[in-house]
Amino acid sequence: NILGNVNDPDGINSVQYSLNGAAFLPLTIGPDNRRLNKYGDFNIELDYTTLNSGTNTIDILAEDTLGVSSVKTVTLDFNSGNNWPLPYAIDWSTVSNIQDVAQVVDGKWSIEGSSVRTSELGYDRLLAVGDLSWNNYEILVPITINAVDTNAFKPGIGLLLRWPGHYAWDASQPRWGWHPMGALGWYRYEPTGPGSDQLRMLGGDGGVIDTDNSGRKLAIGSTYMYKMRVETPSGQGSVYRLKVWEQGTPEPTSWILESQESTSDLQNGSLLLLAHHVDASFGNVDITPIGSSPPVDIPPSISNISISASN
Image 1 (cartoon, one colour):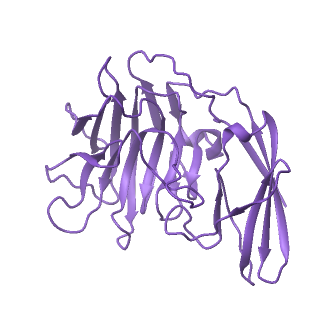
Image 2: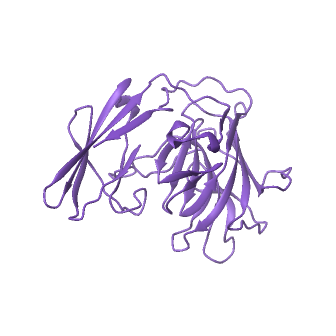
Image 3: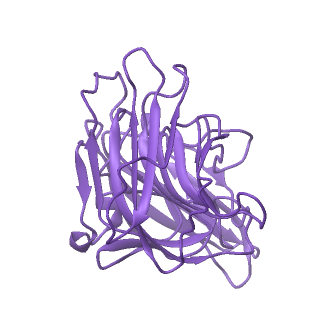
């Protein structure tokens, strides 16, 4: 994903891109009420199988309503032999560029001390960590809820395990299909009524597979530890578990949410830090493998790619 924004006082007519001198392809200009949040936002989705090992050039051509055009060239250095290590940790206080330690899938993000924060409220603001070969692992990360867009449809904040990437549910660009997936553990803000504002877990098909009916509420301005785990016992379906507790208090001994999926569900995938219409800060990330993970025949990831741009 190469994210950007184009603006012009005369209005935007079109935005296109070309990879390594190939024919220009059209880009959708935001907002689209999904991944493209602001006017002029665009998101170039590159299939890593189309990239050259080494330097790649992406020309982005924008034209305004008067026919005046401008080009920006992005250089992407791709190492086809990269694999994301596990265990893995991020100390945000030592990071100057988010893309050095994670993949920005959607949204604007900024580093603030020992955390990374959404710079704009919007649909599924996403940071990805890991690659398609990851299978059994656990993440521990503190999350602070700074604000919630109460005008949005069911905001939420949490973690998604075994993420394979977006699907083309229709002809939209960028793609927005979000399942099949592993599982999503998050705090979901609902309209008033039974089950409003609660921790819940969504399974591989996007349906709810477990809910916290204890009445537990997460307060805006407070920091909570999120711990989520996935493991696949031999010959069985994958088990997902989630617990959340206020930072500075003892960790609960029991998991709050727990569910076992079908043996046909996804067995591998990366990790997403996910803020859906929520202004949130994610603290230092610790990811550890669970048990022994069998080798998986998956193409190398594009972790640690280098991107630079010029007018």
